[in-house]
Image (tube, rainbow, N blue to C red; front, side):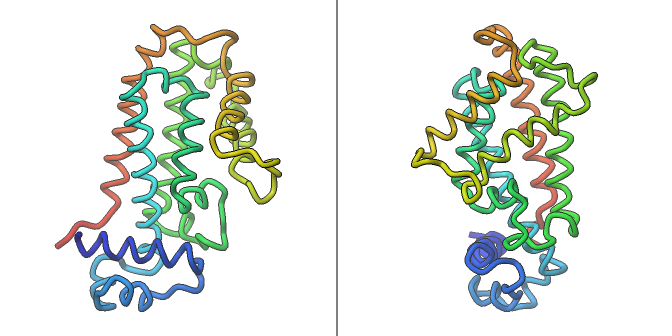
Length: 226
């Protein structure tokens, strides 16, 4: 395992255990088995280090979604995509913190670092291209070009599924909640009836290309070993 990977692992573990404000560079260096100067060799600041953790987590989530899409082109349907996203994010607690804007864990990592902004910017650009592509293939009910509140409505509707501490789950398991999310998205944002298999087959490679671009973009934001 590379030194960068060890530092990111250590930072991620400490971030989840204690939150951004309580963790120091010294803590990360000690846990990763490197000197403090080695951390600063790769990351200019504590903010940049923890932004790197979020970037790597976002890459992992995107790779999960890409693998699911390669396995089944029906994953190109928006309800299926968001169901898989929900499950992938819950496998990665830091990704969940990013989706819910957990300030206690993340502090200012997302908004005050270049790498953190890469994640937010990429998500915004991805959504715009993703929705335009889905509508072009008849897989999205509203035209995003003429429906400026589409992204807001979708994000507002989906966010509650990630806020387990605020929205009672009534004992529902993770898979059942993912199914409920898919049901909401299908009813509120996709055309009536089952999606056309030909449309899904045509949309799948375009969505895969968006995922691959995201992975490349985020990977470029991480430091390399000297």
